Each structure stands twice: as structure tokens, then as C-alpha cells.
Length: 415
Image 1 (cartoon, rainbow, N blue to C red):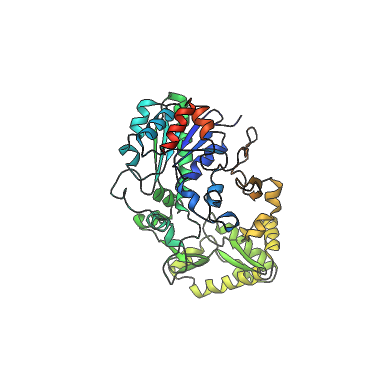
Image 2 (image 1 turned 120 degrees about the horizontal axis):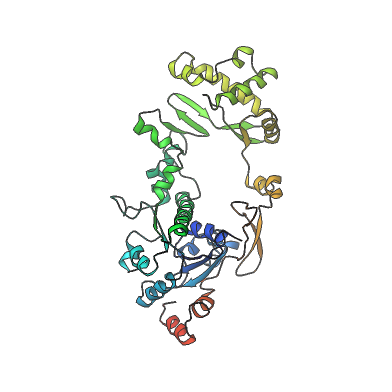
């Protein structure tokens, strides 16, 4: 049985929070996308299937809306808010990503809905949270990555930083929101009461720095950007290395945790004639201290890196991966999109799935489940829904509106 099979989720989120609802849907919940009449704003974001700009053909919407049903509802309208309260009374989760205070100002904030349904887990996803001096700040992806810290590591060291081509901050926030919802759900199972999970995307982005953001307040040496690597004080530490047919990602670092792998690599290179024994036998555990103190000149480190590049350039990505598996090196190919799609590993795990175009019914290959459960595997039960596709099914069939009420609300633009 799927983890959330008996749970119902009202997903009012836009592109900021769609991933949260999709994760809950993949876990078996009945997720109802509550869209404004005309469709969620995410539907107007490209790219579009076949290059046709149409809210039913947004690939972004398709990517984050599988396993959901869709209804339309105008919560700016008093009757729309009344319907939302009625649905919230029977829901387990509600997800929203409006500006801070928007839901409360319309009488459908956490306190108002918790008074109706104390067990409701209410998830809010915004750029900077529901409160605090930055709560009302603008929150484009570039701003959030800058505020959270990861932006400082993106790009070349001799020019301003750059963000990733695909917005990331709200994806981190959406994943964190799903985790928070499940934690609150666990507590609800124990005590019977819901909670308000307040997710700030900039904080989610800060977590993605893997503690590097703590260097400044702790007075430690800060990491800086370097195309294809990082800068640590005077050290240029590459992460991307050339191969005969592309690039690999390799950890060539020092210290008690990582220096053992570097030492292992250098012993292999010496045995194959790439370096002499003196280079092989450097103190790869304490090498960073040698460089930072000046006992080992930086020019010598640059020479060592050229030795390693000579080795990686002489081999294909596949050959380097085989060597990594055989000898325990920390290296992996940098794959192209085509190589990812053709991956034997992903194929063996039955990762790829087929979904249906809601308009043409043509099928497309898409990324599969984010996790494999042995007892309750994730199923792609539903294709991405059309705008308001399930209005009658839900409003009349499940919430008991009469045909006359339904038609009247539709004419008034409430649904």
C-alpha cells in the first residue's frame, strides 16, 4: 500500500511549489491541483511541447503535475473561499505558495483553516518565509541563490557569478516542503493535530551550500568560484578534468577523509609511469597544510595537476569509470543528456517512464520515480491533468454540489 494512499492534498501552489505536491502524489496521496480559472501560472511557462505556446502543453507543468487531478477555483471570490474551506475540512494537507499574508488576508490562512480542521498539515512556500524583515522581498531564482549563498560558487572567478540555467531555489524548497509535510504528518499520526510548515526558499538554498556558508561567521577560509572547480584561499582546486572524449568529475583533495583517495590515485599513476616516486610519496593527507603554509610551493601543485590531467586526457570517460570502479578512485563521467537517456544503469532500474500528452495523446519518455520502494513502489497513476479536468468529478461527485449549483458557480467564474 502506498504510504499516503488514504490522504488528500489540496495543492494551491504555482511554479514555486509544484514539486512538493508531486512528491506527495507519488507517495500515493490524492493530490488535487486547485488552479485559478484559466489555469495555474506554471502552465504559461515554457518550453512547450511541439513549440506550441499553449497552457495545456507546458513541459514545466507536465514535469511537476503527474498523479494529480485538477479543479479550478477563484479564491478571490467569497464563494470560492467558502468552497475552499469546505474542501479543507476534509483534507489532510494543503500546499500554497502565495505571497506572505495573502491566504490570511482572504480568511483561509492556517489559523482559520486549523479552526475548521485541527488535523490539517498546512504548507506555505515563499522566498523568505512568512515573517521577518525580508518576508516581502522580491524572490527571483537569482536573488534567492544569492541570498542563500550558492550563487557565489557559480561561474568564472574573474567575472560576476552566474546562476544555473534551470531555476533551482524553489525546487530545493519544494523538496524540503515535502519532507516537512511528512514530518508533520508523522506527528499528526501520533497526536492527531496538524501544523503549519513555513518553507523559505532562500533557507533551502543555504542548506545546499553543504555548510560552506558557515565559513564566514566562523572565520574559516571561504570557498570561491572557479570555473570547473573551487578556490580555497590561494589554492585552485579543479573538480572537472578533461578526458579523451569529454570530461569527468574527480575529487582530487586532501585531508584524512579525502587524501587517502588522492594517495591511492598517485600510487596508480606512478606505477603507470605518469609520475616519479617523490611525487607519489607526497603527504597527501596533510598536503593542504603544506600548500597553505608555503612549505610546498603552489607551482609544485600546478605541476602535479598537469600530471593528473595527462592521465585523464589519455583515457575515455568509460575507461576512467572502469578504473575508478576497479581501484576506488573518486571520479565519474560528466554525462551529456544523450548519455543519461542511454544509461544502462538507469535502464536496468527501469527508471524511465512514458506519459501521455493530455492534448494529442502522444506518449513521451520522462524521468521516473525519485525512489524505489520494495513494498509500495511509486506508480504513475495519472498523466498531467488538463485545466479543470476533474471539476465535475470532484465538485459534484465528491463534494455533493448539485448540477444547478455547479453551473451557477461556473457562470459566475468561481470555478
